[in-house]
Length: 545
Image (cartoon, rainbow, N blue to C red; front, side, top):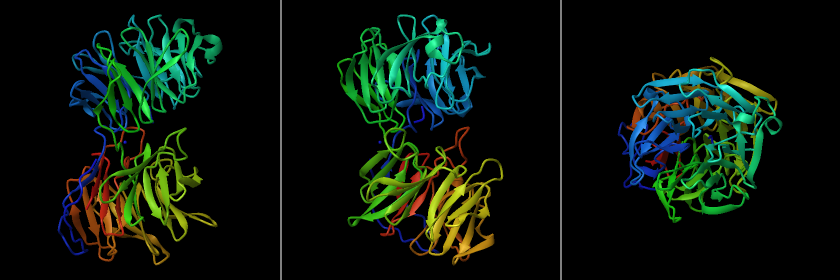
């Protein structure tokens, strides 16, 4: 499914336009070990396998120590994995939500895959070796697959209301949560006729209801049904009565669960990336720590004599103390918890913040004094960034197809294209000057000078490799995150002279299929103190220089 630690800078680095000195990397906040934790299962080798959709990997975890002892990635056919299971022969199967593929990795390592449909999400085997998947968010339906992924998928039912993490029950029925209806159901899959009304065409029964947003279910070794709710509750369900017993309350944003042979229960979080283990006696232990999962845009505000760093973490808006790295607040940004819609970038406009979200395709304005969204725009074409410029919104749009990228200005008289830009990424503002980075062309462009739009734009710097976030430093120079070379650069906007501020940054996380080139959008922001903050999407870190 789609959808929270600190080293403080010791010393001072003097940064001037003409200075070639490199700053020493200082990690202010260290985030989660995974870019979100999704579907899980214990493998034949006794290890816990954890899918990370945003991280584009499957982590192999020692169930006792929490050590990540292996990773499956793109070389293994992994591309945005969401859920996973093991077949009777020990083969590992996983679903790729954004490609619509189901992938099988045999015990020998051979990879086969089959396209089902966009949104393919939960996956499970019956006790007799039958394989089932369902669609979620990007589609709605239940399918049976050939375990060899050879025969075409068999459609079972549609319009279920988003059937999520499923498990086969000891009574021979398929159990799963209906994401949009707050209930857990069971289905006699052989009663379904392949029609689009499951309530009429299937033997579908409500097992328990009253959930906030149920995300997944699993049976333990004693045949008892367990479920997780997005509100953080882990519950055991009495299948006969529908009664629920709360076993644990964890942070919101839970994703999936799994049992081992000793009936230890593992629970994952997509929002925070943690995995916890709940022993049969109820003791809860963190197996993989949580925190930042896909840090992107940054804004720094002076509040109460200190600097507060606001960071868009896709599933959350997080606030940190700029000196200590202490997390001051976290606001979930997924359905049902907040007005926010997955902020990927964040920029400051006085006490307000400007958010953009390529995933939700929205731009929002957020008032930090009231902690509320005051404006929402849902008609930009895949916004990659947004800032306030001379009272107007300026948005970097990827557009609807190749070559459709541009930077647009929302004026009182309508929207004006400032410049076509292949993949517009970073935006920076100083008075009447506006700059944009082109991620694809590797350039920094000045679009507006002294309030006058430049046509064509002035190329300030070229030859960069995947420039992402930008900011104007206190001395007027431009700071640019060059994600392709893992560096923070300083550019003199008047001469184009470029120098390196910091190297070896944990930036440049590779995008998964179906997303945007800038993906996590590692960014930079400058505080009134002169401190420079950089988000590292690949390492789940926040730096302070």
